[in-house]
Image (cartoon, rainbow, N blue to C red; front, side):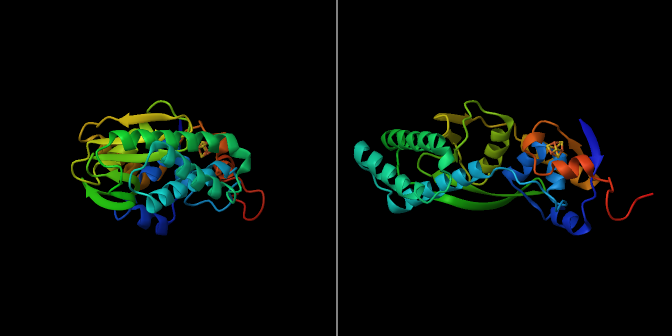
Amino acid sequence: MIGRKINLQDAILAQVDMPYAFSQSSLNGFYSCPAKWALSRTNEYRSSPDTSHLRLGIMVHNTIDKHFKMFSGSADPEVLRRMIQNLFDSEWRTSGVYELESKYKKCVKSFIDFEIFRQAHWKEYKPTQTEYRFKYELDGFKYSGIVDLWGEEDSIMIDWKTSKDTKLNVSHLRQAEIYRRSKPNVKTVIFVCLGSGSILTAPAMPPTWLTEQTQVFADAIKSGVFERKRQWCRSCEEVWACEFNDVYLWGDHPW
Ligand code: SF4
């Protein structure tokens, strides 16, 4: 890994200094490639990656939220299945991501199966909160985020993912640690990966683990040195700035 100095402008530095609230996406974005995280805050000339998976993810999340707003009681499993399917079908017609139909169908099937299971096994089917926003401070760092579903009676938090993940990775663990501390008495944080049908339960990490992870991020912000992890370069929006920064083809030359 090659470290490089990226000059965050003063305004950005002020924003990302300690008043900055770390989120699971900023923390995981930093760890996926520190240089990409920094360039995304300074670079105006991005390439345009395919955003269809992102749009499908937003559509699935919005439809799930709509389901919980419209229905929060309990029903015969077949009635529940039909209700969810009909809601998704009506949202799909205007989704504009028809090329991802097979992924969409898998997500809907997984969600229906999981909800039928959840209705039969949880003490309370109705979520206590959906899409709830939190902010808190831990060891001098601020954190913020949005939890997809919180069930108080069962002390379980759910994050819906449209990914095909079948195994927990360190990104899940960071996210779970941030979420876990947003409420007292959280017993379990689970990731329901609708693209694969897997349910991943995040174990609690040692008490200082999250602070240590965040400290590395904060130190990079302070030093302005960001590693280039060349793992996801093919789909990186910052690839031009990353490869050609300080190369002057037009405009002022440095020599
Ligand atoms: S091109 Fe690769 S190394 Fe450079 S910022 Fe993007 S992901 Fe990181």
